[in-house]
Length: 326
Image 1 (tube, rainbow, N blue to C red):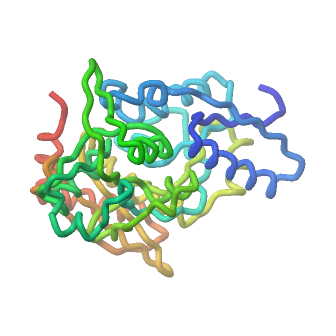
Image 2 (cartoon, rainbow, N blue to C red):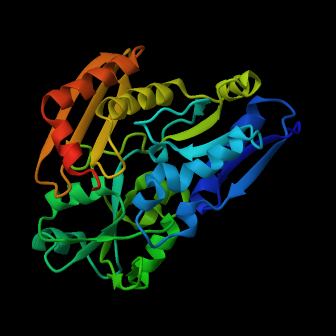
């Protein structure tokens, strides 16, 4: 591999913005480093119509191709949105070398022009449709707006907002379409990255809609045995975000959740303590199991394991199994 530090990423506007932030931090920390961004058009970027499950979920759609290039020695590191990285499976030979400081982790509501939040609340969503591709968001939306129609909605963040504004239906695999959507549920951090934060009409609190595990965290992955790269990445690592990531992902590991499981988790550090809340919902949002615990911030995986085991003890495995694709 050349002396130029090569980092892989997706071609989307948001992924490139996240990767450029990594590059900026590396250059500010490591004197004289030369960095090349290697862009990938992943399976999930090529197919912006179908559901992610046939591609192996988010991991297969957005992560696998870049990981393969890193394993072949073509890259020193790879940028991933942490919420896209599978947390219920081992990744032999790879390690998260750094996480950037966490962006706001919550979800946000974006409305089509002419529709108000008051109207949506007054009608409880009756007669309106809301677009999302995330089973977690769909489950929470069905709890918050019982009458609303949830429709499958794919695409990069800026593309989804454009479709919303232009009343463009979402094409479906094999033909047909749904929509157009009246509203979208999206990650606040993603809207910020693509310059669309001004479209947010409501930010969901964790009590309303618990974030996805790792949401708002940018992860930099590298080969476990590449200690030179690990040393470079350690210089830009944010310990608080990394600890929260470890706790939240430990919950996924314990639950053995799959890409069709509505699972949420969010950790916060205050002083020397970490608070972790996680939940498991059924696909319809009718049943939810949620638990919270606090522990030492220095032992995040132990806290995540305890929360995951408590969820299992309260029946989470049954909900997860019922949502598993046949």
